[in-house]
Image 1 (cartoon, helix red, strand yellow):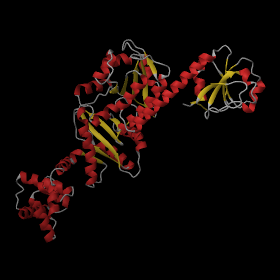
Image 2 (cartoon, rainbow, N blue to C red; image 1 turned 180 degrees about the vertical axis):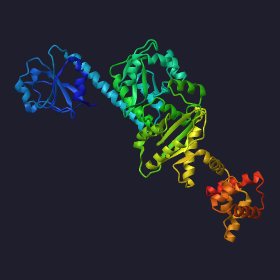
Image 3 (cartoon, rainbow, N blue to C red; image 1 turned 60 degrees about the horizontal axis):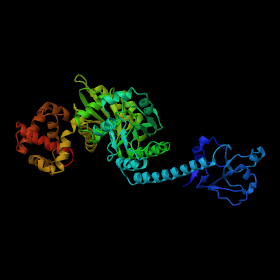
Image 4 (tube, rainbow, N blue to C red; image 1 turned 90 degrees about the vertical axis):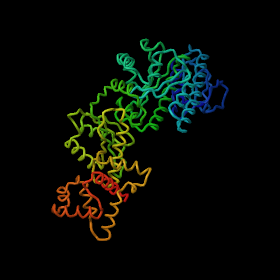
Length: 516
């Protein structure tokens, strides 16, 4: 397996080598061989090892490209001026046998690293999940592994190795870090160092665990998606582990991005938690409340889900983090994430507050300029029901746009009946729910060139108030009275019966979504 010449330099750094590198990045080394002073044929992918005194006997034109030598005689300055060889020199006191063993270990690890890379890459390209990647990782490291998201929820771990460690078992059994353990972590310098680090960090904290851990953050674009842990349980840690840890974290980051509908917009620890709630993956009330407390996510009594959706021609996904900043300045106190290419916000307020007209006006003006729309759910009180209300916000947008309502904000309460009808339409023809007399009125209008259906719809939409309906149609109240009486006559119905009005109102809603 080929290694770069600079990688070889790094692996023998403890011997304090000096180097005169002519070609670096383009030079691969496939193996190591000893040379002698009478040799004239050399291969460009071999690192030749010997004494410098032997090199002096070889003409410049025959010199190998890559040489590692013991300086058993001084190097003439003039010699280096004409050199077109990658030359690594070691002090004459260095034991060349020890150097060779170190290089053999380096080549052996490099081969293992390449094989591990291929296994992990194959798993990634074939669409394998996080647990499958961890199973491969356990084979690679020879130790148990664990991965958690940015809110310290456990996403996967090594199943088949029982471990006598309370810290490890707590994360497995509770599926997250408990508040008591989190307090220990937050008071630990190691923990705070790990959170900020982009490199694997060794953790040796006997208050948490009797075993040592290596922890590495899983990062994308400078944002923390989660963390990866290796516990020193079956095999002692080696210096080479760090490189493998960085490799597997890169693979896990790709899997987490691919499998999650969430784009971690700000690196907040609550983002993955909210995404899991929206996915329906978090449902147990008690653990959810504990995690809310840990994340300082204090929500007020009344909750709404607001979903912002782009309706412009251009894909504006890359601008969504900016949109969040603006939207959170318009609506204070919201918690926002980017989810399924939408901005999803949780608005919480107490019983004296609400999404008032002033807030909605600011939001509407912004959305109109950005060619975006919003859907707002009904009010709810339990965060575990967030998925249902997220779907309400999505459905209100879909229904409002389907009905060609020229709005920027679609409130679910205005479309809840249509949502109910959509669900019913999956099982029955909606026409079967319509009052037959409604069709009789439609046929009458067709035959007599009248427009009584419109008058009925306006009457129903104004709560059967004759005065309001007359005002909406810009006609006299007496004219509206006449039309309502005529409609009752044609339909052979009495509007004084509330069941009749309910039946006609349902027919009107079905008519509105274009079924009739």
